[in-house]
Structures are given as C-alpha cells and as structure tokens.
Image 1 (cartoon, rainbow, N blue to C red):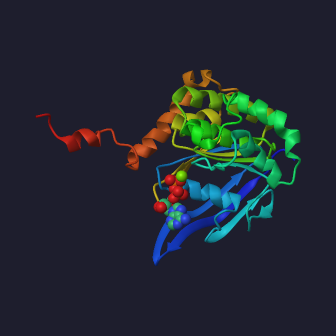
Image 2 (cartoon, rainbow, N blue to C red):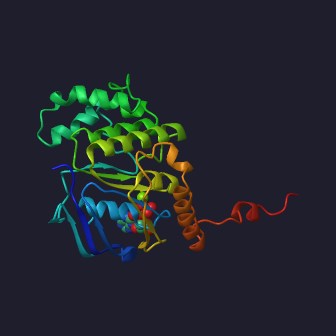
Image 3 (cartoon, rainbow, N blue to C red):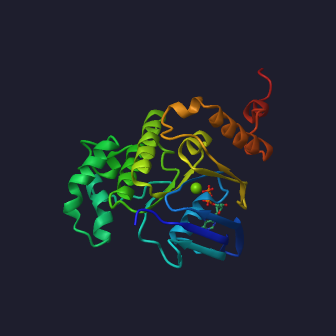
Amino acid sequence: MTSVPIRLAGASKTFRRDGQTTEALSPIDIDIAPGEFFAVVGPSGCGKSTLLKMIAGLVPASTGTVAVAGNAVEEPVTDLGIVFQSPVLLDWRTVLGNVLVQLELRGLYASAYEPAARRLLEAVGLKGFEDRYPFELSGGMRQRAAIVRALIHDPPLLLMDEPFGALDALTREQLRLDLEALWLARRKTVVFITHSIDEAVLLADRVAVMSPRPGRIERLLTIDLPRPRALVARQLPGFTEVVEEVTRLFLERGVLQTTGKLAVELGPQS
Ligand SMILES: Nc1ncnc2c1ncn2[C@@H]1O[C@H](COP(=O)(O)OP(=O)(O)O)[C@@H](O)[C@H]1O
Ligand SMILES: [Mg+2]
C-alpha cells in the first residue's frame, strides 16, 4: 500500500484540565484522498497540532470519529511517519541512532537500513553529523534529523507539524523542493501544517484555512497549479490569486493586520 485515506466526521476536541476547559477544535469534517497532499494553515493556537495528533491517534477526539485507511482511530496509528512541531530526539543517541530507532521500534532489522539512513541524512545536509548527539546540533539540524526519522521506513502516511519552522529560509526552500519531489515519486498521503501561506499553496493539492480558536475549517481551497511547482509556480497568476485569497481571509479575521500594531504601541517618535 502506498497511501491511505483519512476521514474526520464531526471530530472535535475540548481539553479539560484542573477544572478548566479549552475548546480547541470545533467539529471538523474532512475527507483526504489516498495520495493527497493536504495542507493546513491557521493562526497560532487554532488547534492545528491537535488536529494532527487526533489523526495520529495521540489525542482522542471528544466527539465524532477519525478514520485512517478505513479503520477507526482508537489508539496511536503506527503505519505513519510523523514530524512534531519541535523535534523529539533521544538525547543519548546519535543522529544516526535517532533515525534507526524508528526501525527498532517496528522490530525491523535496523542495520539493514543504515545505508539508506546515511543517504537520507546526506540529502537533508547532515552528512558528517551522523555520529553527533542532539545537543551538538542547531534547532534546524535537529528538525532535519527528525524528518529523516519520519521517512526512513517509507510510510504510506506522513503527518508534518510545521516541519520547516525552525529552518533558515534557504534550507526551508530546499526542503520544500525535496518534499515535493519525494511526494511526486511516492504519492504518500501527506497532512502538512504550516504558518506559511506560500509554502501551503506551493505544496498542496488542497489547503484548509482554519479560523482562530476554536478552530474550524473556514475555507477549503483546491490548488490547481501544474507540478512540479518547484520555483516557477510563484510566477503563475493562479498562485498569486490563492495567496491573496488566504491573506484576505486572515485580514478579515484579524489574524493579520496592516496597521502595524508595534508602531502604534510605541507611539510617535520623541
Ligand atoms: N494537552 C493539552 N491540554 C490542554 N490544552 C491544550 C492541550 N493541547 C493543546 N491545548 C490547547 O488547545 C488549543 C490549540 O492548541 P494547538 O493544537 O497546539 O494549536 P496550534 O497548533 O494551532 O498552535 C490551545 O489553546 C492550546 O493551549
Ligand atoms: Mg501547533
């Protein structure tokens, strides 16, 4: 199997802790097709990470249902690769050891995957760092190691939570190109969360725009730009139109403001 469908029906999340309730997600209905690249953009705190964790079976839905590959999600889904918002690496293992742990956890023969792991690490710019420990890496390097760990077992489903957030702009652009090429070659189902409207539109088949908390899908946009989009798609009128539409929606919701609050707060120059 190379890819899987995802279905959320009335799936919502309310957190209850110490007598406090936080309505993180309003009921969500989405159908993601096998092999689809599905992006989610939305303001901080609108429930994007919660949505991803519900799909992964790491956070149970408060209402409604979540299904992956046609099966109701009731416990952590194992046949996937997941990149968390902040890279979760084992401090006591090297970069290579952190990648190979994915296979050990699955009862696979890890050393058989070592050459592939080294190639993937080289592909994300970590050649020469295979034997370093997480504390010796920058945040962006740790995140790249976590991305390799999510890919090494070639899963049919990739869940990525702002995977490029900690990267410098150039590395981010490169990894976006790499991810598009990988997706075109393997057609995995990808759910990709980002703050970047540009990144979402360049990568996705559909972009879900979320409202501020409690998050709901405010608009679902189909991105019809030809692939590979690589670097050229930014010049297409279709690209600018969609980016403008999402930006307008964020302006309407107060997620973006053109007035420049900082300047207002600082007042006139004395
Ligand atoms: N485990 C948790 N317990 C209580 N509240 C949580 C928990 N996880 C997230 N939240 C709250 O749910 C809301 C959505 O969080 P999150 O999904 O992380 O948003 P996003 O990823 O869009 O920034 C936030 O208000 C957050 O504080
Ligand atoms: Mg988040």
